Image (cartoon, rainbow over all chains, first blue to last red; front, side, top):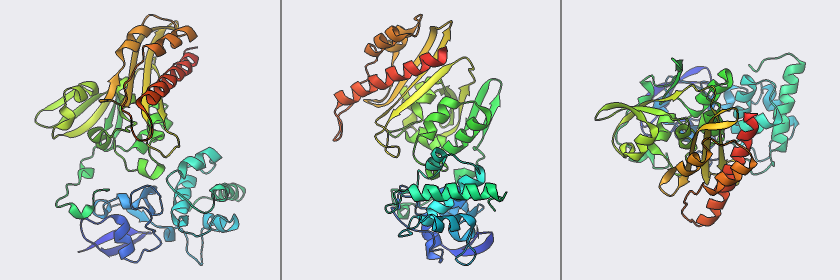
Length: 159
Length: 239
């Protein structure tokens, strides 16, 4: 069946089976920026924002979130017009294989929107559902701190 | 979701029952069963209330999961690693559910009478607002992300440092939860000092089951250490 969803500020008709998780519905409809890692809610690669809050899309039945606003990493910035946060990830060297990056960026985005001046401990808590096997996390946390710093210096919001 | 969604033949979306709320009315908190762990944590941050419960929930699972895990689902499921039950039991919480009969009963009765195993829909949890109650909760996990080995919660009421009421619960033990009445009785009418805490530890004897990682004796010893540590923290709060 085809049903309308609100994804990245646009209405999209997605092809789905009623028992499918949001992760698989998104990936089967070309939102491949949402990564499939553990499929058990442990790794956070499949993170999307539901009404602005990070969730593991592998733990969400697609049918139950039809009325919610879904944001994938492409919803906050693209390859040609990256968000400040995405630029900071590149500058800080927080990307290596890149598999965890969409989830990390979205979890960080949600944190900075709610708390523009997070402490290092608050950043660690916000990212506790996102695993990275390459970076050792230090540069990822640096990237979030760098973004917070830039937001304050330039008096910017997280939009 | 660990059981394959492919095996699901029918779905009822309880998300539209408007059970996602936290109200503070007549000296009681009413927490709708569809409220998530994150909802309770945010409410506590905003109001400074329900801090013991919020602390326990903020240490459970991970940020994206806390945005999805509901209070009602966790209560009905009661996994062995639950971080929710110990603080709620120590807070003397009540539970309202719809089943064969609509009822409001204490959470302890809900567990003791086996109602948890019957078919019903949990509507809300009711927690009394007790500003003079001091409480704390501790969970033992080797790493932040791991399921806890146990969760111990203590709530105390004291007058001039003399304890007048104590509620002590531990979960993940043999039989899933334990109301530690011996330790409670020992603490009543005593001043919370180092000597009392040391003695209270001897009256705190939860029984565990050995597993492939830890022996029952190791868990029992660790639980005692965590319990006395918690009492030391509360002693500081009583000052």
